[in-house]
Image (cartoon, rainbow, N blue to C red; front, side, top):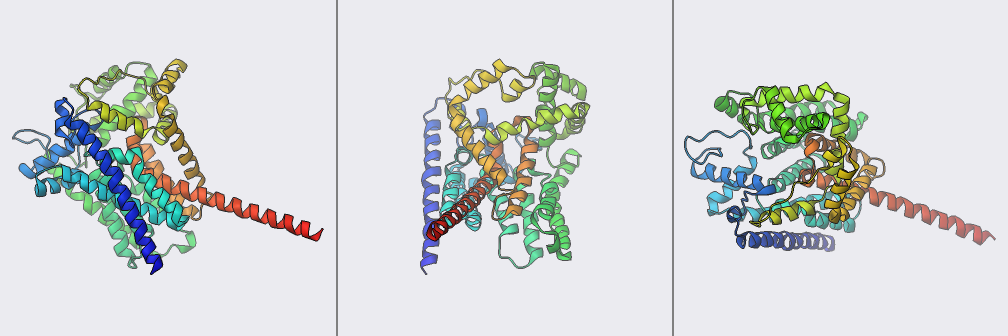
Amino acid sequence: MLNISNKYRTYILIFIVSVVVIGSSILFISLTAKNSEAKEAKEYPALNIGVAGVTYDNGFLAKNLVENKVFSRSENAPFEPDTWRTPGYPFFVAIFYYLFGSLYPVLIAHIFLVFLTSLFIFKIVDKLTNHKLALIASILYIILPGTLLAASALFNETLFVFISMSALYLFLFSEVKNMYLKWALTGLLLALTIYIRPASQYILLFFIPAYFIFYLKKEETTRQHIFATIFLIIVFFATLSPWYIRNKIKMDVWAFASTGPYVLFRQNATQFYAALNNIDIFQARRDMLEKAGIPEYPIPQDLKYSKAMQETAIEVITSHPFRYAIFHATSFIPFFTSSGINEYDRLINDLQPDFNPEPEPSLIQALHPFSLPVLITVIKNHGWTLVENFFWLIITVFAFLGMWFSKNKRLIRMFWAIIMYFALVTGPIAHARYRIPIEPLLLISAFSSVFFIWSNYREHFKNKLKILENKLFKR
């Protein structure tokens, strides 16, 4: 009874921290928005400014789903079908808007989602280390700037992380005996993450090989695993098929969303093209549009030109594959070490009507082509966040060591396959908000590594003391 009591005390403590910390962040930003003279801030929690522009889309799509029964960003009929966003998170928001006539209850749901996600972290770290470290890891996740940012407005990351952690916990740690049921539900949950965030569209290409190569020992593989994998894949694509069919009917294109081609064209290929030719990013975008035969600017977000954009982007990237590999690899630096505090602060600044940030160079611009003065400017501009940068550097290093120094090295290697997937698809637009989906995996891996290394060191130290005592006693 004592163990059960202690367990629930821990859960209650994590819940209280979730409510106090996330609730305080929501209250702070909501009051800031309320007191702001900026008209865009009055839409809170669906902000239509700066880094939070995506939250306005989510709120508007949800309202259109409820009021006009369409998935569209159009304000008036005829409502043009939207293929830029996907319906997972807007549908989640729409449920609360339909029930309460307000978007604020979504933020209350965010608090519970953060709490449940932190419980998954607690349970996994507890299996790999001990109760105290598991509690520290779960609370640390709650207070991370990225967690606070995503939970404090209509960002989709909070729901995404909860669903993805649910899938991993179900797949790797749950006590469900029926393998086919467990794997089918995992396929369903992984597909739902794509409805929330299309960036995970190719996750199975990493998830399944990672399981069989890194996690499951060769001698443990059975025929049941093969059939269960097939079942997982079938459920996965069956879950995604309605949206493919919808886009084929509405836009006459077999595609899930225009987000992937757009990002590949506008960010990855265009930034590489600009660096390659040492030209302004806006000029590079116009050159790329001309290459793709697209007669309009800004870059279109629907599926109409997605094929041409994707083909042009791939042509530019493959024209210098080795140089692009180096260019893309440098994006890992901001992906793993960028500051969430900086993005949280930017959100607060965006709420001010007179906030007009001066353009500043990015790390990519400093490194391609390399410019020491630009690099120094980047460091100066972000110097006040160096503490968090260093924190994430340490977390990343220990998480990486976890592939060799951990109670479950195979699990950490599988986690790293997923981590690297998101690092790769993020590319040159890497920043703290794009790291949010894998921050729980980094924390779990780092804590597992630290515990393993410290335990071994302590055991080694004890053995040395015993040897010394024996020698002294013999004398």
